[in-house]
Image (cartoon, rainbow, N blue to C red):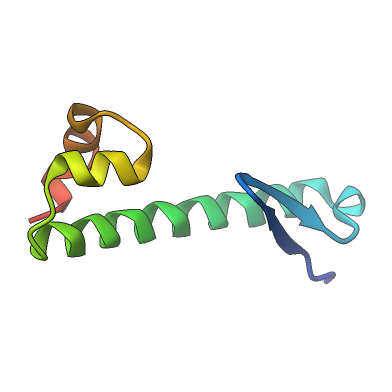
Length: 78
């Protein structure tokens, strides 16, 4: 099994290594990374809310609207 690494460049994430040899394996890695990032975002939003941060502040950090942030995370932020 070959190890793949992700590299981050600004707002872009790419695969380092020979992902072309196993594109489905790389896709699975990317999917797992996406799920981990979603969980991390939810945890951070919950922590920010517990620390008294407003939905407006959270939305600004996420680059979205207050309403979109609330709709996405409100049920998980309590």
